[in-house]
Length: 125
Image (cartoon, rainbow, N blue to C red; front, side):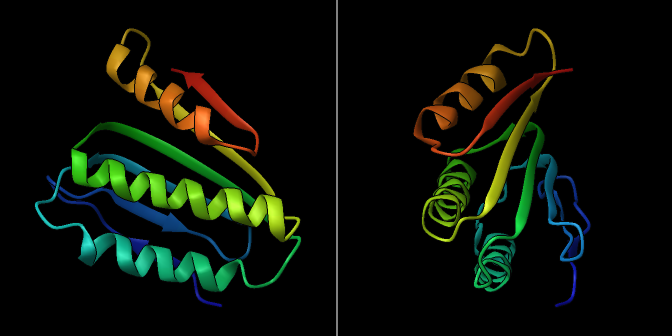
C-alpha cells in the first residue's frame, strides 16, 4: 500500500499517512470551504489500511485552527479509529497536540477524547 501525502496550503492541512509505520498526521490549519477533496481520499485510504486487523495506528492531530466542517471530518476519523480499535483489534493511539494556553484547541481535544474508546492523549506543547 502506498503512503498518502497532501501538502497543505493556507486553508488546507498537511496530511501524512504512512502505511509502513502506521503513523498518521494532520497538521497546520484546516478551514476549506469544501472538505470533500481532502478528507474523502484520506478516509478512503484509512479504510483500506484498516481492512487488515491488528495493525498499529498512531494518529496525530497537530492543528492550530480548524472550522466546523473540518470538525465533522475529525469526528469521522475518530469514529473510524474507534471502530478499528474495538472491532479489529487495532492498536490505536490518538495524540491531540495543542499550544499551552490555547483553550479552544484544548477543549476541542477534550470533547473528542470523550467519544474515544481507544487511548487518546492530550499533549501540551
